Image 1 (cartoon, rainbow, N blue to C red):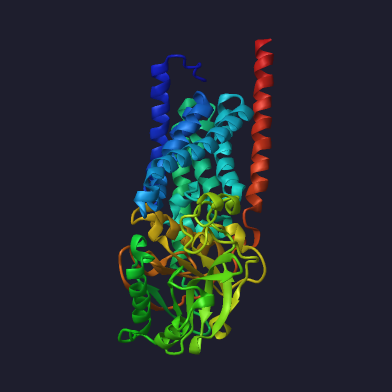
Image 2 (tube, helix red, strand yellow):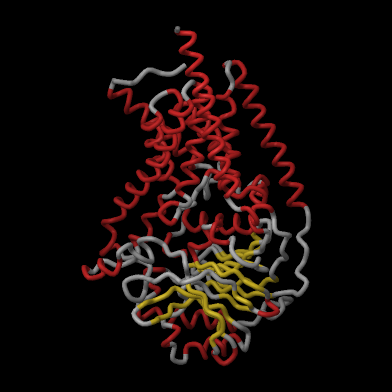
Length: 511
């Protein structure tokens, strides 16, 4: 039964506060909390609340509470130079959270309007929330961060991403949450919740079986050294520290393998690892080659082309010879570039992360790096690992290589959530992923998204390990999110049809 409009301001505030708390409860399913059970219950109660009263207001409050807890790390970059940018931090958090809230509000209200009566209205609210996740993953360059499906990463259910991706797991999550409210009788809701629990148990068992299957070894072994220098962001570019951090990279590169470990075939340095440009390196590239003793090094480095600067990954070979170079294509809005940045630069407004110039230019094309016997590699620079939709072009790589500088995001939830994204890419594409981060979390991830070895936040060192094998291309690697776009359209049509039928039936009864 639908609750009548609430006119008492105190009651409205209470309802909005409860909605915000439920949104925060859903956020507890995300890393680093990982309380997926709490998230599922909170999401189910939120759907019931959204169908019972104003879905727009409930969605706005709940989405704001969700983002405020799940993405509070957004303030961290502003405190790298607090004397300049610190005042912006609360505004960034508030506007980001309200933006997420607006996505939820529009999704829930449009879905509820399509649904009409209580049962179909609940379905409409759930479909609207799924649409909010899907739309924000693509619109305005996209932000597929802390999606509903991400709550399953540390459970066997995450293996389902190989079939349906993180987006499909989000659809499953919403279906499990809404199922009790689709029952036409109240006494059927508890058994329906039991059905949801049984589905989770069945998928848990299937995922556990999948995890127990061995990943085939590589035909030709590839031994990696992943370097993590642990350079704090507030010190990284200071002249009195930049040289020290560069030599720290060299020392970690040159140190002998631990007993029983083979010499590396490839060494990975993190994003923007060096204090010089690729085009003006001086003796820097030769020093890298000498430290590596002829082993190729994948270096995160900035390069210049005319008046443009690029965030790049360059392969440095023996003698400092420059091999294949990849320029980052998917840049971070307001972090690595600012829309209309050329005009705003005249007023001294620039991007936070860019070291040179007033921001980066985007690379022209996404490409794979052919490293010969080391395989065909998909390079991902930082934020690019967040976007599965950017990885569906051209030949299938042999493995994924991510370099990143997560020091911008503090030592709490941001870097952990970024690692979650990398793990999902490995599952979705059935490929191992090697990840070099400036100060965590560096990791070697197998083709089922399991972390084989890692270095956490604030740690300095190396990972010496063999690259895990690959799996056959799973369905998601072939289809991506296209089925879910079609599924959303079909779900909207179904909800609208059910809602229309219920409205006609009510008019007949009333007549």
